[in-house]
Image (cartoon, rainbow, N blue to C red; front, side, top):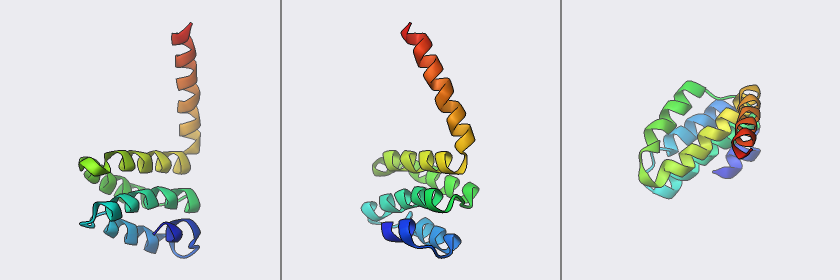
Length: 102
């Protein structure tokens, strides 16, 4: 699964659909890995059907074994699909932390 997300230069939409389907798999390791792969797709292809993927990930976030993995995938999507917004938030967080520490 990871190989398809990281190294397959094929149709990102096809890969996205595969991992969205696997996100619903009964085996919790498969579904968690599918969430990770959706984040990898955002990194490699710099595009996703973001609304569908984010909605699907949010639905799975309430599943106990999925919460941390889904959060990581959502972070990857934010970082790689919206780098300017992420950079701005990072700078703001550093400024707030520095202010708090003084």
